[in-house]
Image (tube, rainbow, N blue to C red; front, top):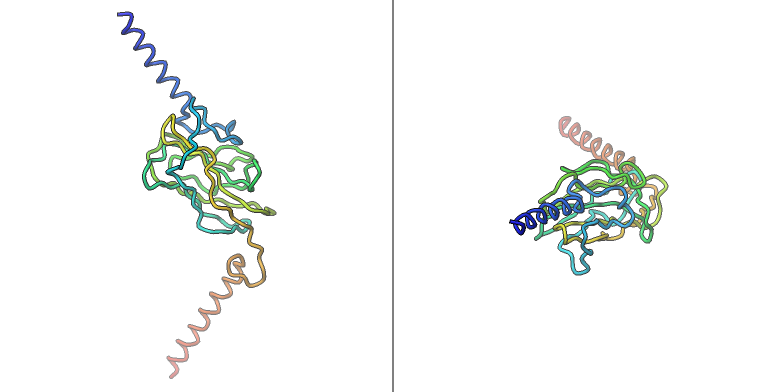
Length: 199
């Protein structure tokens, strides 16, 4: 009988302990710099099944950058993602919106990082990040991704994004030029339609 009671107490204790260490409701703000979950296990050092992807090789302050955490094999159970200048530890910029079952973490500002709000079972999570005005230098996204309570990778890094220095007429960062170009095309189409109707 004592053995059964011991096994029962041990099971309950381990379950509660894992729940406390596993952060099923996301990473706390105290993990912003190290990004290491208190799961009672060391992070993985081998190849990760997860990848941090970006849709551009550059950024323009104030213009959204699309970034994702992806895996072709293993589910994402939890994560913490933020942007940093390469070689620095401070979080920069803000995330424009929350993905499903995500929540902001105050890492330097109230929308500087995102973590899960409940345990997940997905293979892709998408985000939109907004670089602040005045930002310069190369930027990367860093993410800690959890496969299970004892299997996780810390500070997985995306490719580096460089700051696009805008020049007059560059369609990649001159929204006014894009708008003027679109208006010009519409005017030309209108003139052609008018000309055909006259003939």
